Amino acid sequence: MTAPKDPAAARRPGAPDDSELPKLISDCVHCGFCLPTCPTYVLWGEEMDSPRGRIHLMQQHVEGTPLSEPMVEHFDRCLGCMACVTSCPSGVKYDRLIEMTRAEVEREHRRPISERLLREAVFRLFPYPRRLRALRGPLRAYQRTGLRRFAQRSGLLGLLERVSPTLAAMERLAPPLGKAQPRLPERVAARGTRRATVGMLTGCVQREFFPDVNAATARVLALEGCDVVIPRGQGCCGALSLHSGREEEARAFARRTVEAFEDVDVIVVNAAGCGSAMKEYVHLLADDPAWAERAKALSAKTRDLAEYLVELGPRAERHPLPVTVAYHDACHLSHAQGVRAQPRALLAGIPELTVREIADPDICCGSAGTYNLFQPEAAAELGDRKAAGVRATEAELLVAANPGCAMQISGALARQGVRLPVAHTAEILDASLRGLDRSFLLDRASEPLPPPESHV
Image (cartoon, rainbow, N blue to C red):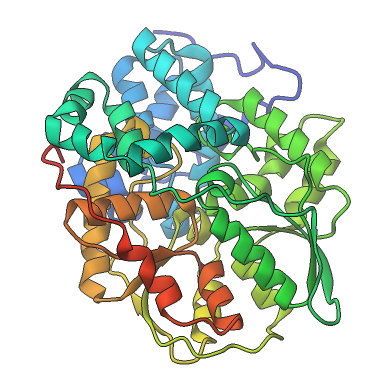
């Protein structure tokens, strides 16, 4: 029998004590309450693709079983959606368990070279806004000149799907890109009497692919009486790295983010995954003496946009916006941060706007950071389920508070031949506060639909 691993064997400076893992594992009583909330268990009914089953595999590894390909595959198939955390009667911290396990996988398991190269390409691109910005021009030309439609009709995308499902997923998920927008100023002044000064995270994908969301966020905060500080020195918050087990990379991003926002009392975040990651800095840098207290302070002052606006209370006039919307719960907002009622309260405060609920709101849409890139088949199944739920509401507009969710559900709807505009909560509020016509939101659906894709 293999001897149990020594928790202190390879302790790295600033890294968490590995003895935490067996302590957290012991909290699970294997009751099964998590099973109906787990997206992969719902899809396949496979015990090892449930939180309970994965915790059993974690226990095996702690007791000395080496990480095998099948074991790693079960961990990779987890979306990290945290639905199991909110459904667990024993308070099992599965979020912490899966992040620690993924870090262990990255340290100990050697993936095939093709997989390593693809992962490295993804993590060398998406957390870097300047690199994404450089990609915008060629990608927009590909979308606007007919090259994309040619690639779809000629079968080139089908070939790409066979050669690299990850690259094919990246092509499918890319949102329609408009002209590049000017960068937001470093400070946006409050309208009327200033009520607060807040920092604003601009993000990576949000900043480069959804700049209108950031512009709307800054306007809404200003209209509600906030001076908005947008530090030039900010970059990626580290969410993608943190949730993928790339600990040291995540810590480097976290330290830079802490430095950028130390001079503000509140940090407002409009992307669910980013807000969740920043609230976790308190754990990520807990064992780094130089950064622990600074990280703890940042986590304590991080707020999701909807969370903060409800705390602040409304001041600006809401103008009528006669539109029916379906609200989608992003997992890292509802499960990881516990922010569910606040977005609905903000939407309910808009005259003539109707909110419809989507069936099975706790089941992930399949985006989950990089999940829809590295697990495209499972992600597509979940996306199709979510798109069907959205369609059943017969809403005119989908509201989602995370860029990954917006891309994932839009792609699934397009596969089903449905043209439905998607907007962020900030954009809905912005339209109401500025008294814009409903067509401002609904005209987003004017982009031509791609032809249906047969591979999904």
